Image (tube, rainbow, N blue to C red; front, top):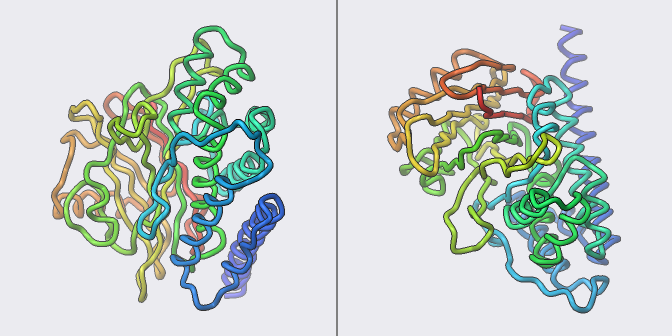
Length: 378
């Protein structure tokens, strides 16, 4: 019993420490933009969802009005909705080299990776020029945020530009404010996991190191109860989900995970990371669900990513090939979820069909969980 009590205390301290990191980053953003975000965090009249919506809207408004940017800069597009409801998370791009490293992280290194990603996005969000954003980007493992920037960087790298030149040209083309809106959007989603919500929640990333663009068909229908599509929640709700546009243009098809962007070496190839956040709704159940990623172009080699952060049982996560393509059937999705759940996995590394599939969560215990899943070529 004493050992169990010590484990629970360590969990509480870890979760409290996570919140402290989130509040530190909120303070950084307050000082940089000259806005009051702590008021939102401390407002007891706001529930977690309301507080997050206000935080994200405040950050977007701050980016659009910040006086520290060059006078000639203009925003070209506002990525993702800023209203209440499930929020779209832009794809984040890292090198293929770093993707292969992150895909093998397990235990607390999974949580540390998410924290490292958060700190990098924080630093990037506080850039005052194209040059400073480039410097804050290439100083870490993030290459770009948003398909628009990532695609433009990839094109320039393939044409022989050095990374610094490629980033400078790409951000200059899409606009500094557009690039920063994507950064603060991704950052706000992670801060929500760190700061606002209660126990029984998971923030996960899915890495796509393949040449396939993946979608989760009709995912918006069922984030809070099943009404069709390939997103299934056994308990809880999906609050943030990966979503971007195939070419970076707003009139191009939506994808959840962009195919890797070509490069001559693993240090130049870009691999997309999709971010999701799920938590409990109310009562005694946690956050448990399944996402089925299907090739945008069609075909039958889909991938099912499962996670569970229950209140009374151990956390688990799994990943598997699904040969049937899009599912769009509650009973089948429920059966897939249950089969993967019953395997009680924390770390998975296997080869199925054309893919190598990996999945890791930081711990089988604790109510604030982080996860890394990866789809790569076998």
